[in-house]
Length: 328
Ligand code: F6P
Image 1 (cartoon, rainbow, N blue to C red):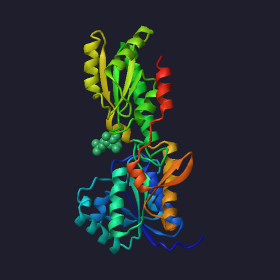
Image 2 (image 1 turned 45 degrees about the vertical axis):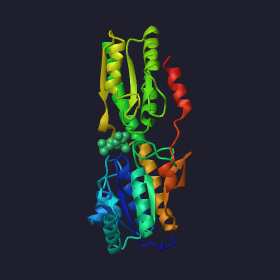
Image 3 (image 1 turned 45 degrees about the horizontal axis):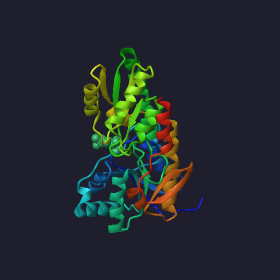
Image 4 (image 1 turned 30 degrees about the vertical axis):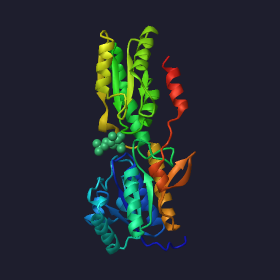
């Protein structure tokens, strides 16, 4: 094995946690051990860089975490890192610890922080997409998305039991502040009557038509999956409008919330995290920087970080069509 010129790197998780982040940290740490590079775990994201909360992680220090949700390094959205003074402190600490490169596991906000840092101090970094929202350009899947989907459909299946028992209409809110990926896939997988996402121009008229058609076709209950960021209104507003339009309907609302962020990662998320973790370390060894490691058509690809931050994955129109056809 050729000896890497890089001697020490840091790894941190930043922004919202997602299931599989631990598997990604483990992969980074173990890849470093394999290539004989020292690896330092930074606590609480960028906050830990500023507060100098870092400790060396060996291969054994990440045992028994591949199956655990959350991030054992913890995560934060650091206000101080947004200031020049905060970033200067962070860089001094990195220098004092001899850290020559960084792996940042998080979403686009986390990548923006790393980019600014790189521009100011030249520290090489590679991003790994970790968010349940699946809204990062440059990868087909983000770490945590698959687990969140499985959590969502398990919950919606349970809601369906109750909905069918009472002949009710349920509005179920799933996460996705700006994106409808969780809503669209979990809605199709749980047989939703309608799926409302911010990327589509939804209207109350269409929603009411769909509900009416479903009633006319003999359905006694319906589930409408709504993304958190839906522009037509939140689940409570939509439920209220529906009750007003159909006074005979028995309408209920469930907000799935943060249960979608927790839990043991699925096999898919663990494998994805393992692949991206190793790829990120290898990229740093190869002298690459300002890139995000992702997966496209089951192959590792690297995307310029500016594209990962600024561009957006498009909603698959085929899925929109399928959802409509299957709700007949
Ligand atoms: O960015 C991921 C996400 O899960 C969004 O879908 C959601 O709006 C947000 O995090 C919630 O963040 P917080 O945990 O800070 O409330």
